[in-house]
Image (tube, rainbow, N blue to C red):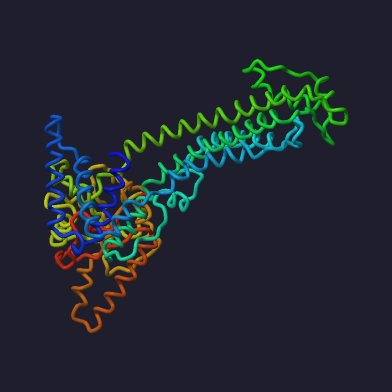
Length: 492
C-alpha cells in the first residue's frame, strides 16, 4: 500500500468509526462501497490469477466513500484537497539556502580573500559537527523519529489543524481523529523528507557561498591575506594545511608553503596575485566537505522516504481492517484475547465475552481467554508465558471488574506492562455485571454507578488506555460498533 492510499484509508477509518449512528454514511452507503470495491478487487485478482488483494479493496473502497462524502458536503471536498506544507517547504528551503549563501558578499572585506574567513570557517566547522552528530545519532538507539519535534512534524504532515466550518458533527469528529492518526503514522516519512530538505538546503547554502566568491571575483580584484592577534604564521600554516588537505589531494590545485603564508600577512602590503589560488582552495574545500556530503545525505534520505512511501507501514491487522478483510475472504477469523485481572470469569460471562468479540470482530471471531492474573502479583510473573506480540491476536483486552477500586501500583502496573509489550496497543473492558447485580435495587445506585465509571475511565486514561464499559451477563446492553467498538491504547 502506497502513502496516498494509506492516507485515504486512514481518513475513511476515522470517519466511519466516528459515525456510529450512520448519520453521514448509511448502511446502504457502506454496503455499496464494500460491494463495488470487492468486485474490483476480485476482478483484479482474477486477471492476475491470485488471491483478492486487501490493499486494492481498501483503496477502491476509500475512494468510493470519500467521493460520496465530497459530493454531499462541499466543505469536506475542500478538506481532502488540502495540501500539506512539506512539498512547499521542500522547494522553498533550498532556494532560500542558496540565496542566503550567495548573500555572503563580504568575506572580511569585499576586495580581499581572508585566509581566516570566519563565515567560511564557520560553515565548514558547523557541517563537520552535524556529521558527527548524525554518526552518534545512528549509534544510539532512540524511539524518536528524528531531531524535529512532534508539533512541527504534525504541521508539515497535515497542514493547519483548523477544520472547515459547516461540517456535520460526526464528520468533524472523524476529521479531527484523522489529523491525529495521520500525523502519528506519517511522522517517520515526514521526518525523512524534512531531513532530505535540510541536507539539500545546506548544500545549496554552501553553493551560494561558492558562487558569491567567484561572482565577486569577476568584478573585484582580490587581495589575499590574513591577520590575527594570537596566531603566528606557523600556526596559521598548520591549520590551513589540515583544512585544505582534502582539496589538495583531490583537485590539481597549487599548494602553499610557510613562506607563502608569512608573506600574506596583512601587516605587509597585500598581494593581489594570490587571490585566485585561495578562492579555488576555499571553493574546493566547501565542495568536498559540505556540498558533496550533504548531497549524498539528501539522496540517501530521499531514497528511504521514497521506499517508505511506496510501502507505507499501515497495520492491517487492526479490528477495523480485519472486519473489512473478511468481506473479501482475505483474512481468517480474528482473535480477541481477554486478560482478566483479579477477575474470575464464569461460564455465563465467558459467553458474554464471546458475544463482545463477535460485536467487534465479526461473527467468525474467536475468543482467547487467559487465566486471571492474581491481585498484587508482578505482571512479569503472571504473564510469563503470554506472547504479547502474537500476530494472530487482533485485540488484546484487559478485563477489570467495575466493582473493584483502581490502584496505581496494581491495576496501573498491569496496564503499563501490557501497553509497553503489546505492539498494537490494548483495549480495556470494565465489566459492570457484578456491581449491578449487587446494587441495582438500592436507591441512588445509578449515580454511584456513573461515579464509579468516571473514576475508572479517568484512571485508565491516565495510563493511556481508554476504557469501554460492558455487561458480560447482558452484552447487548452496550452494543459495540463492528470493527471499531473498542478504544485501543496507542502502541508504544
